[in-house]
Image (tube, rainbow, N blue to C red; front, side, top):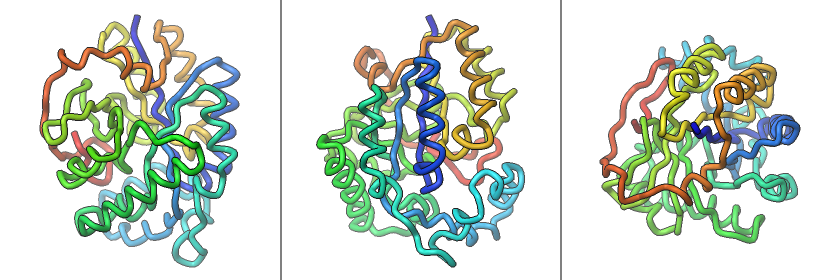
Length: 284
């Protein structure tokens, strides 16, 4: 039976405050469990305005109707509006995730800083960013995080060497076809191998599920609380219903990790590349 995992990223204050409750309600109603990757620190989404000078990013924002998806306040956070905290401001909501049987994992401290400026951050700054993310997660949940999924699937070799020291059971930092072992640190990687709604549209996601319905490779769908927990909520339900009709079993990423045979996996080094309808290079 084909396996589908829902990798849900929480990138913004809006995603934590408004999108997360809607997604939890949808998943609860359908009896499904997901893996939630949490941004813990400040929402400085407004700094993305600096990226509008890059044609690929400007095109993506127009194509995705970003203002409608993320809202005016999000577009001003960190510039005209003070940057509010994301996960750290909602400890009870984070605890609700795991209390409901979902997986909680780490996604970011300052999402915008990492996504836009990682190549220019000093190694010490990268480590402090990771420390802040991990320590805030542990202080709220009482447990160390077992997984990390980098913002925008953006990593470099420094990151891969640093994350080895945090006790993660696995990473989910790439857009690759199948699970593998990172050459740089020996850690298991469970990649997102299905497209997002923002990249392919609802029809494109459904077509990818259809194509891979007989695959023995776990299918990992990247989901965002701001998108599927917002104006694409109905589309998300259509996708979930289609996956059920195709015979997919929905599992958390940590459950897949528990059952996977690591000795059978290939070892691969980091490669960056462009994917269709994404503004920046990803780890592929």
